[in-house]
Image (cartoon, rainbow, N blue to C red):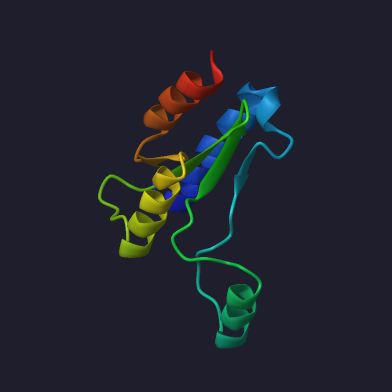
Length: 112
């Protein structure tokens, strides 16, 4: 399973099982992928930042960053720096490698 497939499966499960997450409380930040030079400059100028977690979860007035990786996927240096910066601000970040791990995290944060 690719990271994109894992993310799609996790997102679909979360919004189908937790109505409270459907309306902007769980969302993706399109900060990856291949871009041409002009597009990349536009995104950078408008605030796209490398290393931002794949999914952001807002629940009970708290934010969480969720980075999705395959079992062999590597967290980049930029991702590590963002995660450290967020943790210094009291925002928990998680690296999730399986669908089951994602389910456990959502249940822990949002409830069953």
